[in-house]
Image 1: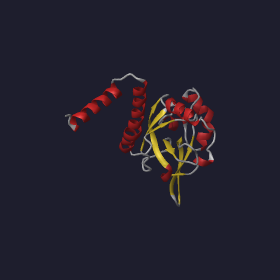
Image 2: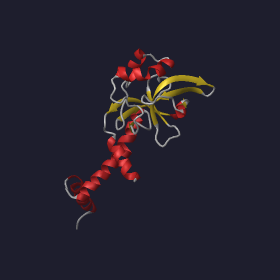
Image 3: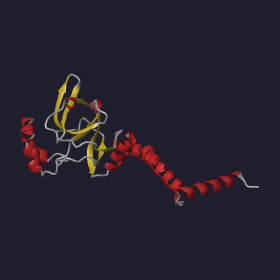
Image 4: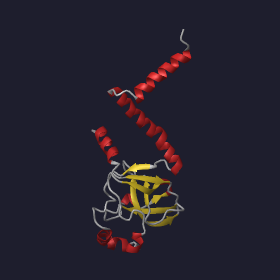
Length: 196
């Protein structure tokens, strides 16, 4: 008679073979589902814990931070009057993180947005009254009776929009620290397929 332990080992061996060695369509589907579950429930929360934010990785879904293949000098020249009217000189902008912006489809890695460390020029992600969080550059830091707040602007947008004039600490989701070009198109593609 076969013991329960032996039966369990046989089942595990069959499952292992099916998942890792079988080349059937069903095995591939199970692998994709497992990969999704591992990323979504293990890796993503683990990165969030490590980086101090609930949103450690985001795909950029708009072109509001693109510089349209302009070199830095041409980009700044086109926006010069706006930035200088907000006390941001070209020399200041050259020292900002992601001074050349980033593109739709890029992946941005985020750390905790610590209000004590955030400076003008930093790229923050925050929740506004939009479907997706917004990822723009801080152009001004102010304070009122509610506390410190931030004003942002997309590098590729000529004005400060209403939703980005007063972003308080409670709205901050993270601060961009690293960019991976184009990898976000995978997420954008899947999202557009699902929404159809």
